[in-house]
Image 1 (spheres, one colour):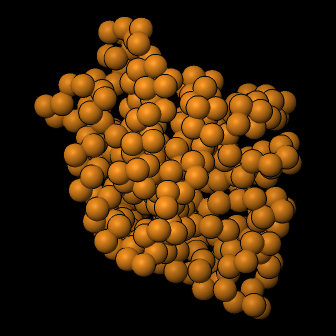
Image 2: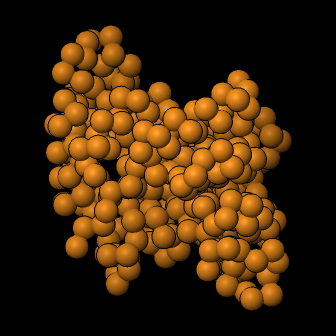
Image 3: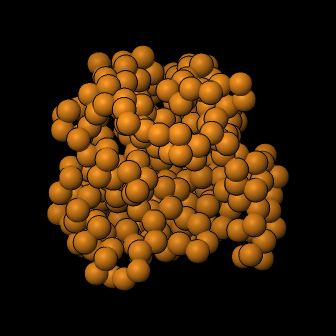
Length: 290
């Protein structure tokens, strides 16, 4: 049986406390279920931001999407996450990623590990969090039994294997990246293969773990060449049509809603996230998909 849809919006830096509160309240009013904050240098620190987001709203959950895991000591992160879980009355989802922008590591004075080492760090961190949150003597205690749900984001096979083992939510980035942070969007054909592998790795958990995608852009019927040109450098090699990519939506709101229903039916994708610049444009789909 298909899981209900959930909708998230990833919020980036704003200029003031008042603007942040207003933006979070607008997201809730538009029907979003989750407000997420990314973890990049030059943007807001995620934990203070999600605490204020929860304080400013009534029902939405909040999420780190996603922590640059090699920046964090796993034991100290468990304390941080448990504190935020308590201060938000159990509304946080903890998102973990491997980190992919070498320049951010250089700026922070942290050695940039190999891709294998970064994935291993996510696995180590997820295992530590699970162990700490399950320990009845761990303080502070979390509000959510077993700790905040873990979202693990990735696209490569090893990262998806880690997600299959530890995650409550698997976030498909729908793109490969190089060390500079350049994104190359994946086609649906590639996604189908990876999701099939993921579901096999999940085994008996396949029907209880949510699958999330980040929609990078929406193109309405009147989208012009200038708008399309913004994503062309990120399209898969030899694939020119945006609609052939997992993380791009094309057409009318009803066309896009139908597309998301198909992705849920065929691949189990029920949790859809957009970036804040698309928050208003995506909102009509929420009403259609409810």
